[in-house]
Image (cartoon, rainbow over all chains, first blue to last red; front, side, top):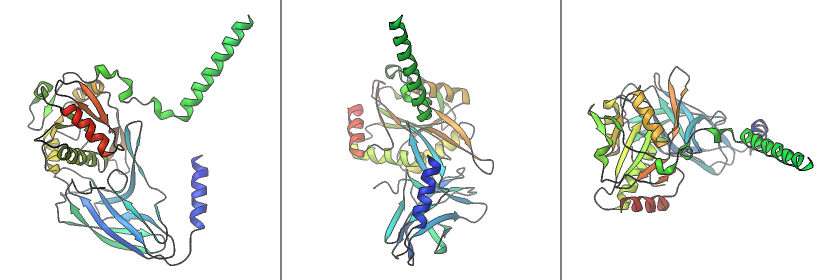
Length: 147
Length: 196
């Protein structure tokens, strides 16, 4: 079932519009941490103002920090995270928001705390638009709750 | 004889249906809050507070509280839930209408200091608790909480866990739950009820 779904989605994706994508990143932020916390999450809105589809396929950070695309899912009251192996599709003229409790960039391997106002540099790799270096602003742990 | 055969065939059909259901929904077998009787949910417990001293649940007597189990290395669902509870507490109004209690399901990594520092992230009083692995197991059982470690690439691990918030009124009686996907107005109504 999953294989059929994946195959259909890949097929659909390959039928995407072939114009030029125009990717912008807005509201990029990461949650502040305290000493001893090796991980956190980062969020953003990816907008594609172009006419062609694109896909966010990978996220990376400066070692020893690592970054990966994840999604939180809750089933029967139990939450778990799974890697977004296929990336995130950003169709032309559309936008995708990564927000608390859903898709996020999982950050691991922090050796010092992230304080409010700090900038965390991540590289976003898009299938068609290539690499984009983005500064994620570190914000309060209570940020992003207005959605 | 014919009747017996019919009964047996019905039994076979029911068994097949049940088996099929479990095959389709294997996760339904995972223990969750549904598996313990709600009337027996909770009860007295002793854990360890962020100062490293024993914490008796008697300290919560007379106070309504929202109880959440998580872990400090949790990147998304735990801080999101605690930040949401802080926001909901402001929306319920009044001066601290209920306590927010955070219990780690990862006592191996989360000692008193880790739990204490973590709860300070949310700019509002949160009671952070840890304990020995045996104490945490006992409390998880009392509250019907499931958790399991999941290995991550690079030797690290994450923890899958019950993310439902449990609500208790000031007499310590179980008063409902808040699920992550639940709308704020429904959650606020429940919080007002237990805080009354």
